[in-house]
Structures are given as structure tokens and as C-alpha cells.
Length: 358
Image (cartoon, rainbow, N blue to C red; front, top):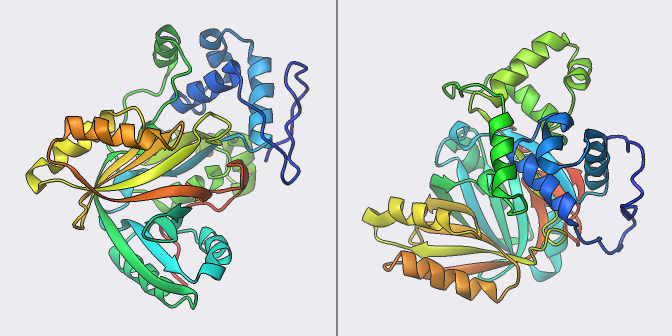
């Protein structure tokens, strides 16, 4: 994590000690996270006018959110860069006494984007990305060789209808969102070419801190700043990488999450995915190759909201049947971030789909 900058007397000092209760987010914190979801690397001066706060205050606020683990920005390969079939959700069942140790072990895998302890038909739910199908096959086989694993079930993703990076908080007014959109200066997105080895190096350099400075990256890689700036602009504005701002879900008011496995007629699969993507609580929607051929990852203010979500989904997709539910008990890892009991970031294991399976 970066160095803490200055002080901000109107904010309490974030507690990092084990077991400390996370503070509640205030309106400016949530607005800042919302703004960074829209423009993750925007200069503070660019964000100052829409948020109505000076750039120095925004910088201090973000430093505190980042250093406390309450919010972060990461970078990973765009879904278009991971061949369908090489992205999967894997249900893992294990010996009861081994759950915690196994979850920690799996969270260290670069291929594991996310690891959840869940209530449902399995013990752990993994989201895994590999660069090729043979690597995915090797990963699944390696899982089965872990002594404490009793069974696995793999659901290969056919299409991502909505990526979680597209999900936004509702902390900004319409005028603020318009100002942010108008102030973005990324140019027209280029065609999404295949990631190069240089791109992959940059992805890993930005994985822990998506706002990391060009000078810092250039110093680490031993490359001229002008070269790194050019490569970084091409990567981030060429559709090959995703910058994603996330917050500790409980800190931001989202007390529960779940993955729903649904079945819809094949002819309605595309329409069903699009409809689920329009629901406010949907973080991710994807078509998968299984009897439950549609899945939805939802964030909820309370577990009671899950039933309401299912009612909303059924009203939009009459032919839909929910076949299974995996209710999140605890995030162990989310898109490369290691998370503590309270959902705050405690570290980072960058997502690397090209990493060999061991």
C-alpha cells in the first residue's frame, strides 16, 4: 500500500488491528468510490469539480480508504482476453475441518480470481480464469489431487453478459455522473487486440494499485516513463484490460451476496442474460455450460432481499427456474484481493491466467 498523505481531521483514523470494527462510510467516501468506478485513474483535480471538494482532500480521503483496506482499485485482463471455456465457476466440497486452510491455500493461486466460503451444495465457490482450455483442465485436475478436497463441479462460462466492473454505486447525482462522463478523455476505444507479454507485465504492475503512477511503474520495470505512458494508454484504452474500483461490501452497506444458478430455454439464454444485467443488484450475469445454464451474482443489503430479487427476475424471465443458490458466508478473495473477516483488503494475489498450473 502507498504512503499515507497528510491528515484529514474530519475523518477518524482507520483501525487496522485484527478484530477492529470497520467504520461506516460517509457520503463523500461513497461518492468518491462511485466516481473512481467511473474514472479509476482520473486526476484528483478532474474529480474535484463534480464532487465539490478540492483535489487535496480527495487525495487524502482515497489514501485513507486504500490504506485501511476499505476500498481499492485493481487491474486485470478484460473478459474478451480470456477464451470462453477458460473462465469457470468451480464448486468445491471438502473435509469440514479443512475448509479454512483450503480456502487460504486456494486464494494464493494466481488463477483463482475469487474464493468464497458459501452455504449451499458446496463448501467453497471459486471463480477461475486460465489463458487456455488445457490450463483450465490442468487446474481442475490439480484441485482433485488436494487431499482435503472431496468433490468438484466445474461450470464453464460461455458468455459474460455483465462483468462486475460495470456495476456502480448510486452515490452520485445525475449531474455529477454527467460531469464525470464529459470530463473523461480517453479517446475512442481501439479494437481489442490480443494482450502482449508487455501488456501482461503492466497488468501485474497495476494489480495491487490501479492508480499507481507511471514513474513508479517505469522505475520498477527499468523502462523510460514515455514508453510506459504510451503502453499504459494503449492497454487501458484498447479494451484489453479492466480497471475496477471496489469497496469492502459491509463498509459500503451491502451485507450479503449470493450466486444463483438458473435454467432457461436455450433460445432465451441471451435475452435472459440481458434482463438479469438490468437488475440493480446484479453484479455479474453469465451463461454457463450446465443444466443450470444461467448464473447471477447478486449483492444484497440483507439476506431477505434475495427472495425479492428472485421475484424480480421471474417477473422479467417467466421461463426461468432457480436450481441452486450459493449464499456467501465470507469472501476469502475477490478479484485478486485477499479479504479479512470484515471484508477489508488485507493483501493482493494478482490474477494471472497465464500462470502455469502446479
